Amino acid sequence: MKIIVNGNTHELNRMASLDDLLKQLGANPEAVALMVNDQVIPRTERAGMVLKEGDRLEVLSFMGGG
Amino acid sequence: MKTNDKLILGGQEFESRLLVGTGKFSSIEVMLAAIKASGAQLVTVALRRFNRERPSDDLLGPLVKLGITLVPNTSGARNAAEAVRAAMLGRELSGSRFVKVEIHPNPHHLMPDPIETYEASRQLAQEGFIVLPYMPADPVLAKRLEDVGCAAVMPLGSAIGSGHGLSTAEMVKLIIADSGIPVIVDAGIRSPSEAAASMEMGCSAVLVNSAIAAAGDPVGMASAFSWAVKAGAAARLAGLMAQSGHAVATSPLTSFLTGDHA
Image (tube, rainbow over all chains, first blue to last red; front, side, top):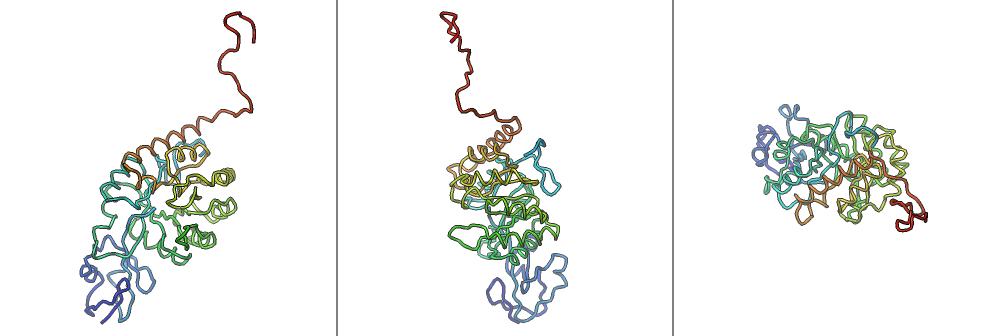
C-alpha cells in the first residue's frame, strides 16, 4: 500500500510496524517524533499504530534553532 | 530580576541567566563547545522533517549528553494550531515541558504574530507546558500572556538575526516594570554589552543565538556573553547609582596650594 512520508509517496508492506518503517527510512526511533494525518502519535501509542492506505506520516527530528 | 539570584521558570531553578539557541553553527562540535562555554542550562532547538540524506543533522543525542534542559521552539508554525502541534511533538523528544512559542508568518521581518502567539500560549499553558513566548515588545500583550499562565515573556530586542541590539529598550523597561514573571530579551542582541545592558535594566535572562553562532570565534563569544550576563545581573543586584543633571565631585574641591575653599 502507498502512504505519504514527509510529503513523498512511500510503498509500505501492510504488515510493517512504525518502528520497521523508521528503520527502513534510516531514522533512530528514539530521536524522532511522529504525526499521522496531523495527529501527534505519542511514543507509548506507536506500537499499536496501524497505518492505512493514503495516510500522511510526518517524521520529525531536532535541528538547530534559536 | 528581584533579589533571588536564581532564574526560576515554571518552578525550576537555574543558575545561568543566559539561554542559548542552536541555529546557524558551522558544525555540531562548535555548537557543543559554545554551549559549554556559555554555561547555559536552557538551550533552544527547532523541529524539522527528518532528512534521510543527512541523519547526522539530528541534535538530540549530542545535546542530551550535555545535561542541559532542551527548549523546543515552534518555528515554522504559521498559526496557533500548528504551534500547539509543534509543541507536543517537541515534548515527545525533549522530555521537558518547556516550549518557546514562536510564530512569525512573514519571513522578511520574522515579527511574531501577537494574536496567534497569545492563543497558542494560552492553550499550551493549560496543557501544562512551561511556556516561553517570543513576542513583540508590547507591555499590554506581555501582561495578557502573564495572565494566561506563561512562565516568562520574551520580548524581542530587534528582528531575529539582525544584530540591531536593544532597539526596543524603552518598551522592555515598561514590560519589566509591570511584570510578575521573568522577562527575557530574545532576538536582535549582537554584543555582550547589550546583554549586560538588558540585565542591568532588570531582565531576568537573555536568549542569544546568532551573536554567538555567527561570531568569528563562537566559543570565545559564548564565554564573553556568559561574563556579560553575570556582570549585568550583579550590577542590577548591587543597584546603579543615581544620575545627576550636573557634575558631583569625587575629589575634595579645596585648593591644595592655598588652603582656601574653592
